[in-house]
Image 1 (cartoon, rainbow, N blue to C red):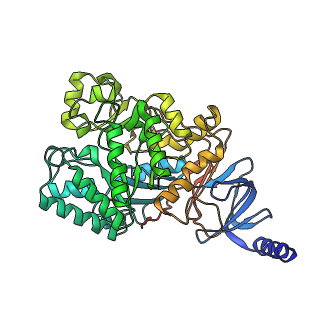
Image 2 (tube, rainbow, N blue to C red):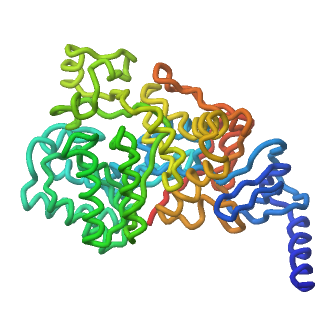
Length: 465
């Protein structure tokens, strides 16, 4: 016991004697992984956390976090916006790592090369079934399919090539397999099962947008049964994206199904965003059939992001032909609150901002959870909210050096004011930075300093398998 005490004192003395590249002092450190919940000083050198101490630390650069919480940087595992514009909003919302996991990327190596040395925050992507299939089938869509991959089933040769491309993407470092079954409705259940087999063979998680939403069968229950059954049959790991916008009023049932599968050995997780509206491309397969009945929506529940206008039957037909993003107001608030508070549900934005237009989740997801659901609604404790933004997504993706405040971990850190953190983005004005997050550090580099974005720094690194 005496020897251990001496060693701790010696380590503290050595830490205090060093000069670090950056120190964060006088803050209250909250680390959901270790349970640390106390005043500590943090020393950072060469992009890594080198010291966590109750003793004073010296640094070439200092952040005084008095009255603030020091937490692991937030990890967004569902972030379509992978541009400099989006990274700026993410950083101001406390996000240090943004990952495109649902749609994914293809070719994967080219996607990573395009961002290396140019990113404010860390980035990464799955090997995407949708972009691979779109390339093979010569679909003309952008982020999502809009013609060939929507309107016909792939041939056997196209399926083989798509599978080969998915495997290649995994070889190139893709963080699993991205799959949007709802966007390619002609895809057979056998083909989906075969993709689960690939995931199992490669020990890769599938991040899946399920086949059908809502209560009307075949709806969310059938869709969940498909992916749970495929996971059970193959041994693949599966992550179900945006559970509230798929299950809607069936969210309690869907979460009970996921919890039950998990208890019986299926590696399955899910996520939600803290908003009562979703967003997708109006030209996609989602709006091809009986969407109003299935989603209990009207034309007026759709909001065209380019102008903010609510749609009519006439404008729906006009904009669907040209394609573009539309906000869907259809998720009950009580379902959002329940999912945000559920212990197993990860927070993820599903965000994308283009020239200042989009959905507020692209700018305010994490501040909204902390400000609205933790502080105002008291739907969950602060440490639990942080767990859903840090260690849970890190564990789902397999990031062993992120989502944690520990010696040796990557110095991705978010410093926020728990009494004032709040989202400012709205459906009418989504391009609004969050408040109450004055400091954000990415790989040891301060990217948000006193609530101002740093300029000319690009410390973000590609995250790969």
